[in-house]
Amino acid sequence: MTQRDCVYPAFKPMTSKYDTRQVQITGAFIAFVLVHVACVGVFFTGVSWSDVALAVGLYALRMFGITAGYHRYFAHRAFQTGRAFQFLLAFIAQSSLQSGAVWWAAKHRDHHSYSDTPRDSHSPRQYGFWFSHLGWIFHEEAQKADYGRAPDLTRYPELMWLDRNRFLPGIVLGFATWALFGWSGLFVGFFCSSVALYHATFAINSVAHVVGRQRYLTGDDSRNNWWLALLTFGEGWHNNHHYFMASTRQGFRWWEVDVTYYLLKGLSALRLVWGLREPPAHVVAGQRSLSAEIKERVAAHLAASFSVEKIAERARVRWAAANPGQRWEDFCKRAQEKLAQVHLPELPSLDEMRARAQRMFARSPAMDEIIARAREMLEQAVAAQLALQPVAVRA
Ligand SMILES: [Zn+2]
Ligand SMILES: [Zn+2]
Image 1 (cartoon, rainbow, N blue to C red):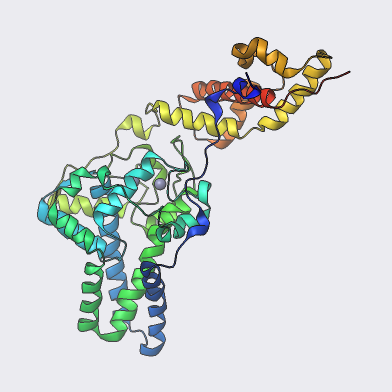
Image 2 (cartoon, rainbow, N blue to C red):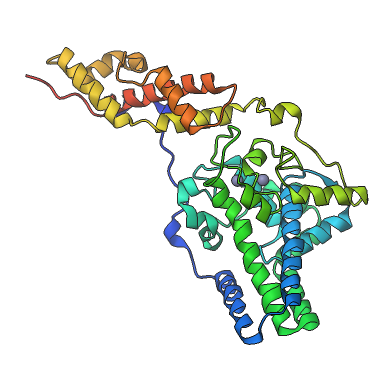
């Protein structure tokens, strides 16, 4: 038996999936940069009020396409519509030059499954702010989508055709603005509003997982952010959304402005969409029962906020003083199955862990259970650390 046989498996650190240095200069990257550069064209053409109005209009139309289409309909199926309107939503959303509807939905379903773990392609906690904002889009591995996650969408040949021709709607819209409104219409109305759309949408992956308030315990870093909600027509209520993603409405309270939802209500009055869903009262009140996976994730996050090395070092010093002449690995051989139960007064108390959990997380009825589990993880991690680094034999 080796010392490693004493290691307990519960608290394994997760390793990163993506190497953030591998961002590549692809054709899509060059196109993305050129869309930004094209905005400089306004210095040659000048800007009229009608150009500004066009830019605002195209921003609003396409933001609605992204939030109602890409996000709430294709990724979450949070409401229903007919096949023709479904295609129109995908076309409008894709005119934002932000990839294809089926790709987007598949990628986004991954985001919710692995939020802020190493498997999440755009987690600020794992990969930093800028990689989550836009670096991941130009990273070959991180931008790969598993289309098997969207069988409800891949069965529509017209959606798959649009997905393969992902930039076609954007090119059509760009050409139309030039034909109808001239060069200043193209530069201001199309390119500048596309850049604003890029960064407002990307901010949901970056800013909305860093800045804002967490009302609900979700096991990830999603936050509610009112100014981002205004810019993105309701998407800034991101912590609400991570807590209960089946809801069409993301602003759970009356004062949480959710323009996408109001527009969808209008479309439902016209019978273009239907089956809109509001969050149930117990969800709004934060009484939703959490999955075992989320509780485990929060407990691991809490446990990881304590230093296993420091606690183990203090325990080792105390143990060596109390057991002169004995080696830790000998103890490990005798009592490996009991190692996790070794009395460790160096561990934080449940009250200390509760105080830290209150600082770190939103309230939840499951918090006591989570704290107990976090302490168990910490205990096992410290025991494993002690087993790996035997106490020096004292003469
Ligand atoms: Zn979502
Ligand atoms: Zn998110």
